[in-house]
Length: 301
Ligand code: NDP
Image 1 (cartoon, rainbow, N blue to C red):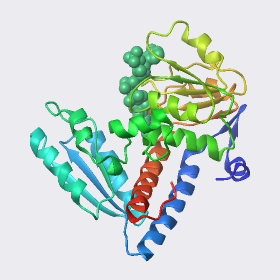
Image 2 (image 1 turned 180 degrees about the vertical axis):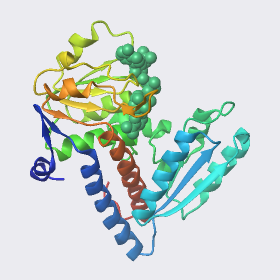
Image 3 (image 1 turned 90 degrees about the vertical axis):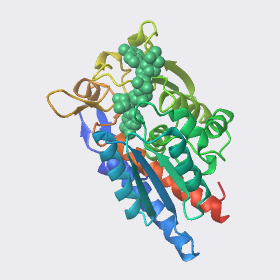
């Protein structure tokens, strides 16, 4: 979405404009669909394989959503459901088979895996060119080296895309990321660095976290603690991106940011749900169509 488009569709609540991840994701997905159609016209249908091991209810929902979104994008989708007792060697065999299948351009193994399975070894078994979650060490290295030929992890890439489409430039800005996981915090820090931001990464041992957060022009919360980030931690006018998805005991979802407080202070704010979540799926589709374009030799990226 263009800056003007987003502003026109964005709802202003209190001081903050809402970064509408649902609307931006729809725009990204429309672009992916067009690229998929162009590939199909050349005889190549983008193919995504999703591997789900076990019965984890949240994983089942995520896989269903990814499957549906990929179909809507015009991809061929194969969802492989394996029992929780699947042996490591068997899962690695399945991954190698998908690596070798020329109709599959993206392979995603839904994490976390059941106990007893070594997810790091499974990720290493993936063909890096098909690793649409961007977790293979070769893709991590590409990210750290600022090499655009890799595939970036979907959630942090979605945060950057949200900023881009809101017209928020990161160059020269102080970007503070709370959380240092391999899935979100660390890759986001490197993506922001590649955009010439001055990056601070915080974690559970950071001293005076509120004071560090107050310095941020762009504050990203990827912690997994409901409403950890209070309004008083936010610099007036800052861009606040809430990655957290916390299921509350009484039902419902909360982000890592106290939304009502933040909206009175921030300049831009992502809601939960409807912020980063939809962007994650959109970037998965984007990575898959990119992998298909590269395999077909029609990508410039
Ligand atoms: P992890 O549990 O892997 O990492 C959490 C990070 O937060 C760690 O680095 C940890 O520090 C840090 N942390 C924990 N408590 C505190 C604290 N009190 N103060 C400061 N830092 C703290 O989580 P993920 O990165 O995988 O996910 C983070 C959140 O994002 C979760 O709510 C998850 O559900 C959500 N998520 C959302 C996605 C989406 O699509 N919207 C996708 C992926 C995740 P330390 O390293 O010191 O332990």
